[in-house]
Length: 153
Image (cartoon, rainbow, N blue to C red; front, top):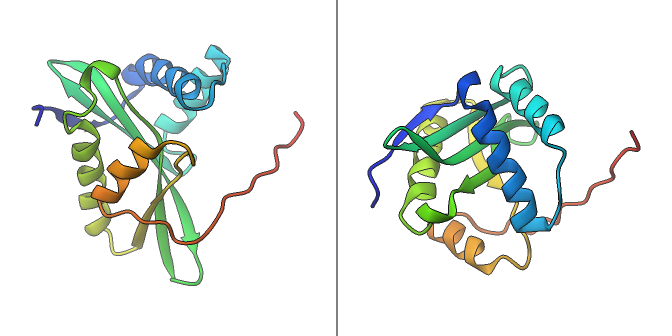
């Protein structure tokens, strides 16, 4: 397993995170994102004013992976779910345990917070490789489908 350091992201990490998010959208959904819009969104996230936090994996001082989690309140369970989002590992570092270490770090944070009742994430239906990775880390399909309606802006 690759020796990495995991830190909560700071404003200095914004450009790297934004670049990874642009790559993520292209790789997983063939979407081209507006760089400045993504950068602004990442800056908002880094202040934790939006109910989310970014964590980055560093190897030899370079950011090689990231994971953001957002909070969702569950009245049914009287607790929070933390949703993994914006998960990305640089292609040169994939299959070396980077995501596993990021995931375990967030899981340990969640375990130490009595308000957190579970972890969730989105995964593309066709992305069997990612699904396999998530299953190995203890995630399963709860029987829900995600639906969305985008607002015109």
